[in-house]
Length: 328
Ligand code: PBG
Image 1 (cartoon, rainbow, N blue to C red):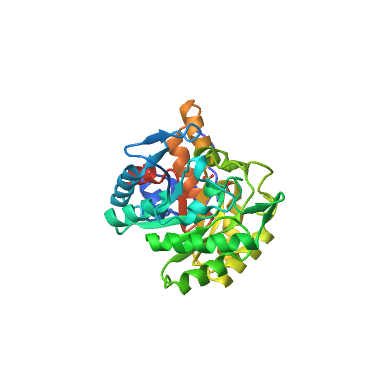
Image 2 (cartoon, protein in one colour; image 1 turned 90 degrees about the horizontal axis):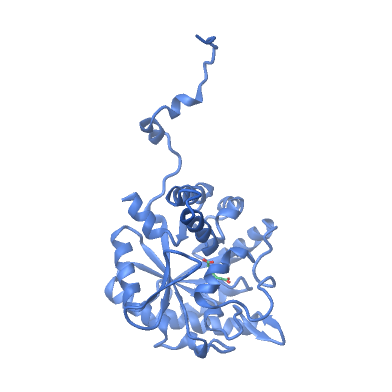
């Protein structure tokens, strides 16, 4: 028999079994907090798997609609759409981004027709439409701030006409939220919300996404607009500006490597905070699962719980459907 110690306080009592653990659990994840990002491509019945993101694919509109229906039925209230355009439709001023019959606009209309209650979130940035692969208009190797604004305002109005619920300016340049709010209101779209990618780092974790859309910058990198990963005070400046300009929600991206930033943002603003578990975060979990090195499902749950515990109200994740099924 071992010696008895006089420990009056034993935190383990609250971890004794699953019933008491569930009683005292501080963080819960639910499908209602998730947004599923989807990649759209032309065609019908087309599913092109994305090599660096096992389990995801570029889908034609009919399959995107089916996916939206399935996740809606699982309790996921929103999808975020990213169009994968053929190179021939890309140019230096993102002309295709305002085509009323463009791939994105048709996708939005189809979803709103067939799954009317699901929220559709659409990205506002030039990169899927740009022959330079940058988020902004490029001149003499410079990514120009203000000339891009006009293009983005037209893009937002075009997406609103197609029926989008929320536009998400994602280029991390200046003045986006205010200009989009004004452009949307001027056209009578005061109910279209703005989810600002307020704090988006120049991250290596976006690699698989750029492969999915073939949107890698042709020259240079995105460091003159996306944030330096070393900074957090700058993040607070960015979110405060976006809230002042009219953002309905703000986002931090990537998520898991920036949990401290999510927490700081949560404490700094009073709008809902979103976090994007990006392609590279997803790919790492899928890769170790495939190799049998770790349990992917367990990592999925733990990482998404961590993002929520850090303060995210809303989480964009490629795992949304899988997670919603696990939680069901
Ligand atoms: C582009 C955009 C990117 C992502 C979302 N919107 C990539 C980039 O900035 O290069 C990344 C998403 C992901 O990696 O999952 N405006």
